[in-house]
Length: 262
Image (tube, rainbow, N blue to C red; front, side, top):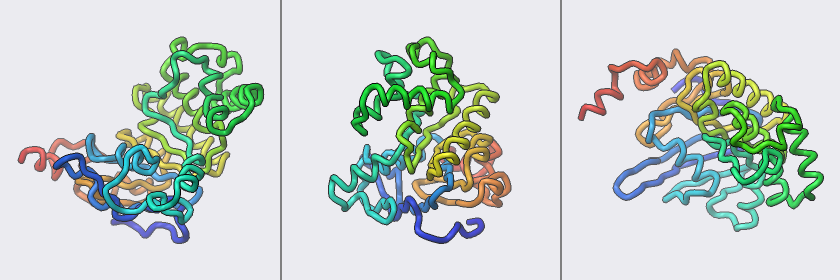
């Protein structure tokens, strides 16, 4: 492990989180703290449970054991109204955008404001145009269908939708997947700007090491169902952990490769 994490009450606190699917133990006692106003990036190989971890926090998957706290409230034992209130403060940028094809861009961005925040249609549309501007898109883009946009523009729209309700927590699932390196850097920059402007706490999962270092204040690596390393993003490429070093430098030979050969 690297240097000690910041002290204080975490915005998100996960302890002993376990989840199995049949005989496969995907999460095997996850412990993770995400401090208020910071960005945590979770890295790891395909199938290591990164998405399962996020889905457990979001309430999309029920874990087998453990605790998930937001602002000190355990979501797994709290009443439904408390859980819903806590999770309503979360914004989510999905891996492929997950925009609704049948809605215009503006309607996509306004959807959560109307459905979850019960905002009037006119106010929601005005807010949608405002946040589209914050991610570098003109209000006129709001009249288009998602299918008329490039992949980078679709990511911007999805980001606008994620920040529309001023969430105190934001999740990003592989935010640069499918983008060229320049557009990936642009999206990462927008994410950092939006998170800082809102003062949000952020959690991202990614395979992109450049993206991890651009987005994250801290990075945690998930391997064999556990967090095996956690530290400042600046130390990611010099962790001195053989598993982390092999993964982050993309080396064919190393402890991960030996496991695959068994």
